[in-house]
Image 1 (cartoon, rainbow, N blue to C red):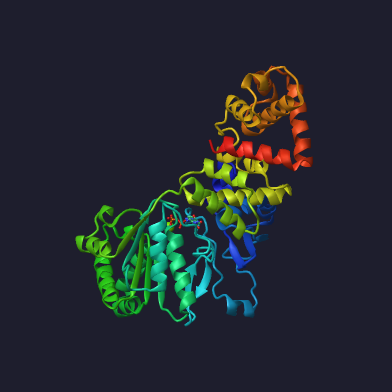
Image 2: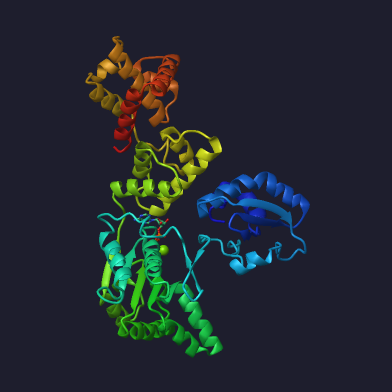
Length: 456
Ligand code: ADP
Ligand code: MG
């Protein structure tokens, strides 16, 4: 829903989308039940596209959407054959509007040897994780605990801001542990689930079962442990769980949005337990890491992101890795919609309503003229002037072309910089486009210049 909301008009979202329900039939098919045929036809006509986009943004892929009339006005249970039931017990339901944000990825169920399932995202592995100066320690420690659990870094406490890879690292530890030992008893859950589990054990007076389960784990991984803040009874219970596991040299991995000390209303004895192992921070990635992450994410989706496109996106999205991921999704989607080649133009168009491009691209014509002059060894006033030689004219045309591509200016506005009218600018752009298509050397020049300008 969070991904759908920005894709439809607010009044449409309020009146039509709030009550939408999705039923996942299998990996590739999702049913969208409607109360009547009219509503179904409307959904199909007006909402298919935004929904597909929303699925892509939220889950990284687009399922086949089947719009159908809800049979009994109640919950639409699609017919499922028995074998499918056997493989996939309880078809996972995509969160419905009662739980508006955030949408959790459809979990692929990693299985332990005893058949119990872990809600792990299959993409959150060490292979896909890009290590660099801002997450090196957290990455190394996570690798170490999956190789030699319960030894040097216990607990491993990873903290940092939103979208910086904490959940990814926690799940990577689970994947790697499972790969090494399919019989490992892994408990992976959010702190919220832990608290809910505890509350329900309390209500049902099933403390023994609760304790036996948590204390039987070889690896206990709890995401967003700061959720314990102010929940005294849960803290108390977790303290005992922690001690039991730690004493038995079982590995504990935790994540949090701040250091143990900065978690408000956390008991002092838990703070000191958390500080007793390895505390590692994940920070906002450097430009080089962002480029590497983008390219890796694209690779995972089966395509190659050209260097200038990666540099462009990495220079615009600087703080949150989740948004980098979203950008790759949008570009993929846009490419499949238009069937065009994946290049800088396409990326700018795909991302244009994220207000990062092209209007927000802070490249000014003067910078372009300067970069082009330097590149071709000309004086700037020669590039913007009237003198004619083959090489000057090429530099001038490239400069105009880059103005069109990298600034939001109109042809007339671009022309003003060069003392030309809009038709001359248009001619220059066409000319460069022809040369780009036929001459790899020119393409390399223009790409190098765009990269240089975009990354400031
Ligand atoms: P957090 O839990 O810190 O809020 P997540 O682990 O959910 O963040 O990461 C958000 C997104 O960014 C995920 O898609 C994740 O795969 C991706 N991501 C984060 N850090 C990296 C990294 N170093 N390399 C590759 N992908 C990353
Ligand atoms: Mg997280």
